[in-house]
Image: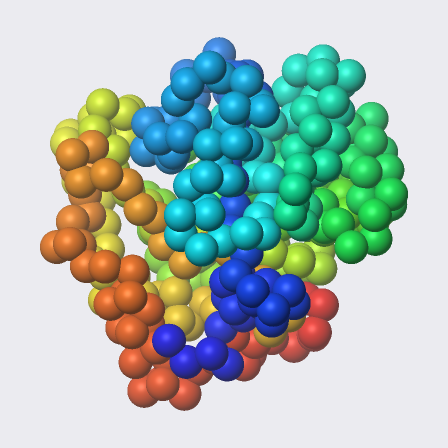
Length: 308
């Protein structure tokens, strides 16, 4: 992958720390509140749960197993990544204690807190801002799951939050000085390239620090599978998806760190799309070839350095 085409997480933090930086995915044992309302139609926790979360369930145990996992892959430094479910749901004191425990771990460079736009209140933001302020070298990134900026799509996928909820949350995250990340899903039913572009541009308006892309995957035993079986919609093959991604990245400011470019689920739980066993390196090479042939790079069409 050509280094200067995309500001990838791996390359950005290797430059910053002079060594590779990984992520330890963590669970607080909370269930996403949206499950009370049926949950997002594509969601299946088994599709994003690392094996090392199994065990005694304690945060200390998760961190220890995560560090062991990373060390075997030559990673010493890491982000404590509260990824599972919705990581700002629960008693405030318990959440803060967990965040502080993780942030204080050996070689931890910061926290990534994944949550819904409607589940991040001012009290937890103030506590996280205090954790960040105590160590200026520590990054605290709030990753908001937006998925789409289009209300019709948000209703279809049963997100049970609005785009305005995202706007409000994003503004409050930036107001307290925390880093802002956004998670988007590309290829949602009924969305063409132009709609995906609007979502990217709308997300970038808020001065993003990080962006994570997933392509829509139809996971078995989800409501999305039933919809797909009854009324098939477009799912993108690898090349078509990467061509869309390349053109969208050109609208993302070059300083935004790209934490992820596509989804990855175990083949046994995946219905569609099937990318015929393509490995990450092959996908990177395909993306680089597309961007090279079309003379694209991250930020090419970005009008402002802090927004799209």
